[in-house]
Amino acid sequence: MTKTSEPNIVVIIPARGGSKGIPRKNIQLLAGIPLIAHTIGQALASKSVSRVIVSTDDAEIAAISGQYGAEIVLRPVHLAADDSTSEEALLHAIDTLEKSGPTIDMVVFLQCTAPIRSADDIDNAIDLFKENEADSLLSGVPSHLFLWQVKNGEAIAENHNYLKRKRRQDMQNQYVENGSIYIFRPQMLRETGNRLGGKIVLYQMDEQSALDIDSLHDLARCELVFAEKQNKDNSDKLPADIELVVFDFDGVFTDNMVIVDQDGKESIVASRGDGMGISILKESGLPVYVISKEQNKVVSARCKKLGIGCYQCVDDKESALSQLIKDLDVSLSGTIYVGNDINDLDCVAMVECGIVVADAHSSLKQSADIVLKNNGGKGAVREVCDMIINKINNG
Image (cartoon, rainbow, N blue to C red; front, top):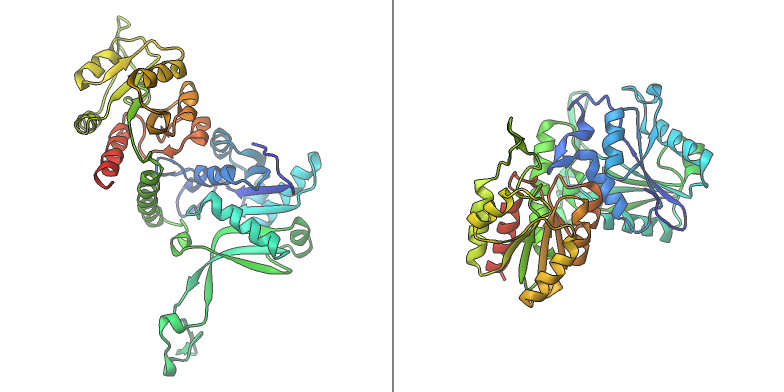
């Protein structure tokens, strides 16, 4: 994806296929989507960057990265070996891009194995780089560790005087490189062969961002961090005064699959947990509706059982939603819409709070206010209901 920006600032995300610690690490699922998709989404949401590039030797990584909005630079196999450096991949990507496009002024190098960052982090780091007229930048987290090393079998204090041990808050500021964000000028990389050189500045991030995924244990820890962060962030994004909740059906109440018998009759699988969530949500007094394009009577049958309003066989969902809001005399600012595919795009963009399931179409995720951690038919509806009830109960 190309975005207009001046100067020409390009994000490059190296992602080779031959990871060892976790096979296929770059596309392992984290919070319901491939690991690399988090970094791509953060880069696309940045206001400062011109292009988002994934450098890879792997066809599957390339396909998935493209689905989530990145441009692809295919890397030669010899630059994706176990002993290949990130700098080699970065130089190859820069040279490839500049052969057919404008000169790159700044490169933002993001490692998808350090996904705990935000689009604001990227923008703020770029601003710091510019303000300081730097040649390169690295991100880091504060450290107050007492470091030691062993020499000739003897423990030697590295960064402190153990005879006069200081309190944590009195120690000199030190930082640990977290591997999340690097920025540099291409010419500096060409001259030094290193991502860092010349005038180097440091962008400080919070301690959680230091979590780098090298093992399944790291991936599990990161999953917990994302779940906690997502729940907090999502609650803040809900309308202050919720008046109406509207769901799409296929791909939201279902996993978007259909069971067809030998006579051509279709059926779907629905979650009882989602049904319980709707029941609890209805007790709050909020009006709950489904607007669906699906013609199968299973939609209205399921809605009738759940006791919620249903409009099906709807081709123009935006008009149907507008009319529903008018009929109920509620506001756009108090309306929540939950969808999963491109025919929900107008409704998601129209309301104050557009929500999409974790496995929604990539174009829909870029427009959504909230991306759920659960897939359609796999707890997404219950997640929305719980989020709203928690918001109501906690004011």
